[in-house]
Image 1: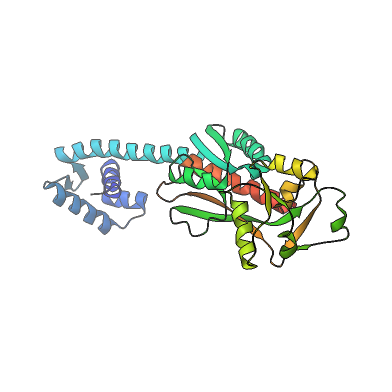
Image 2: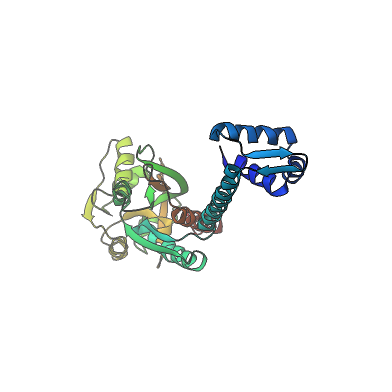
Length: 301
């Protein structure tokens, strides 16, 4: 027994004939007769009485029609209810954004969710990329943006952007006058101000330095990007950031690193063991669209 058979049976009883039901349902009359026989075999009793004047239900058939109508109405209501959930997402969604991406994404995402998904209760939290991985695995986040998380078995991740790392230096530093790039080997000789371990940017630089079999010359560790920029501007040393970070809000001069280039990938991820809710899927779609708009405008580089 399935809902289709029940719908056929109700239509047959209400129309009073197999031929009329076949026309209404666009189903061949022999097929309708077969479905009725299957129902009678399953229930172990006659459901219809056939006569020259047409058909009429037995007592069991009338009881089945009443119950079938209720079941069909409930199924239709359930379908509409589920479609309504998809059409109007609601509920809590927690999104993690690395601190360096916060100025670019947090406020625009919050505004879009507020305007387009008014029933979603969005919570945005910022932190280090490494923290995002831990929070995703611990079910503290529904979605998280991460730097270079390829191969992480517990996360489903999609690459959404890339950006090259650059040396940033104090305004008026004459040693870089007229330069349009800086080989990594030269960077390794400079006094650097970098985040302490564990920090993905620090790890990326150390991995690149290993290719040249040389260490980084770190003279000061600072875990706040704004403070790193302030120290560089004051002449306390040099640092490595993306151009996006170096330029906001007040730009510092910078040069792309070459030989080799250091390119970081940015991923949008969620935990594999935790299916995304309708609301989380809706927020994910808005976040992907926002990143695409920023990337296409040239503001993400």
